[in-house]
Image (cartoon, rainbow, N blue to C red; front, side, top):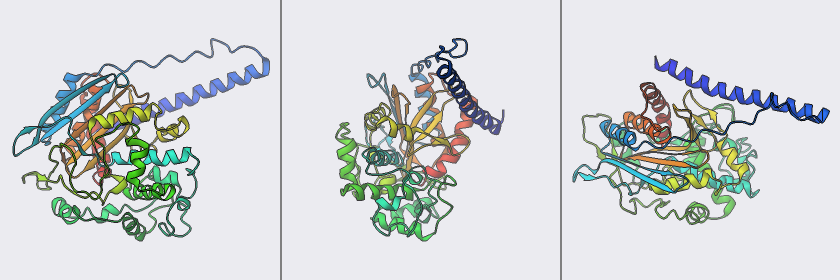
Length: 428
């Protein structure tokens, strides 16, 4: 079966499920109207109690190890994953490969790494906490909560449109990530950029489309949101992050240390795959990450990210209303959905998982959870600029949440998805 057919079947399943939900809602609404009109009980033949969702199959650690070996075979020196199951009662760690190609030391599965765009998920939570406190309105013009002059006068962009990448703001990283990958990175890795300057660069390109009319992933959106957090709270982003998320959840190995160039704790070397794949991997570990700031500069571990996702999906970080807004995703391409700083994938077994992916020089990471928070996995490889690694990591979600290896059809779908999403994530 062709990849395109697979994608069409995938979209059909999602749309059919949505249509079924709308039909059930209509039936229930009609039945309720009948009860209100007649006082009669609902007809049991018409309205049935929905069946409880099937339990998520147990994680298949053997298949997970095989999938991680596939990541190494695709070009990553090393990769590791931590699965937390039973709402954190059980934990499994699987690792393959090396954390240092010079010493050939085994990859450290408890090591820290740069998480890239998974940072966006944290930034979105901080904004939605302010929404819950009535300090920010999702559908208000964002300029109301930003330093004067940051966005053009009269800009209609709303807070929601920043969170779901429909603002139409140009992605300033397009001006940094040009030419040869390694040469380009060497040009900005140790520079310290001011977030207001990054936004000014984006604004200088003009509005790309009418806000709200289409989806276009842009790091600019989440730099603006970081400035919003600072402006509304009157505190540095790093302080707000620590007070509201890191300290309450005891995430002791998660940091926002811009512009410090090194990773604070034990870590694997992060390698950048050169555009000419015959050239050796390039050590890209150290950088200020100021060019990504609140869109992608966070450092963390698999354990901390799993703990964070469980807290998020079980309502420890956001009230139900704001969490529902965050998880209200829409198709942004034929294989993936996006909400407010949150991605959703439907895996081959029908399980939906929520979280984010992150690519930054040296590291590629997936961090996902079931919607009810019963199981999480974070998978990190210490190499970037390689689409095959990214696709292989996606395949590793299947044994974790479906309990089976990925099928050939799922592999085709993963490659198709990686091509689309990596274009976004390669910018952070």
